[in-house]
Amino acid sequence: MASYETVTISGKEYGEEDILREQDEYIKLECVDLCFALNILINDESALVRAAVARKKVGHEMLVNDSNWRVRATVAKYCDDEKLLDALINDENEYVRFIVVKRGYALKHFVNDQDEEIASIARHSLQNQQTV
Image (cartoon, rainbow, N blue to C red):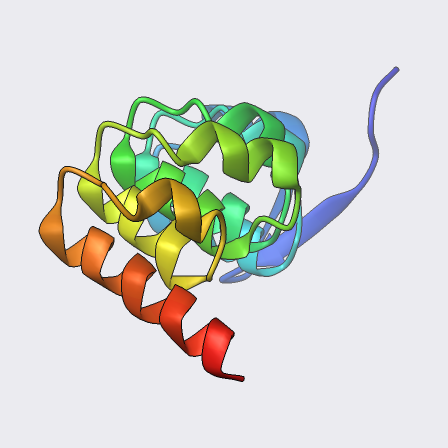
């Protein structure tokens, strides 16, 4: 089934099929900003575009396993699904784990994290929870 929705950017009209073929990353980012073709742009080759989609809280179930740590970190920051956050608590990238612990999620899990800063944040946050 064809989609007849379009968006106009810089005087040019784009449909979803046009966005698939578009090479200009800025056009794609503008589409994300306008919430246009997000389900297509989840699979874009640009990590910047995929991260922008994640900021719109779309496609987290796919993007949680993205090969780019910046995309996973964006999911960690904007995701509210506990199952997906659980998938990120053991992420290989310390910044992704840092985002999760800064959100106060699964603090007990991070108390013995291999990254001392993450472990320290978890211990401090747990201590603050106990004194409140």
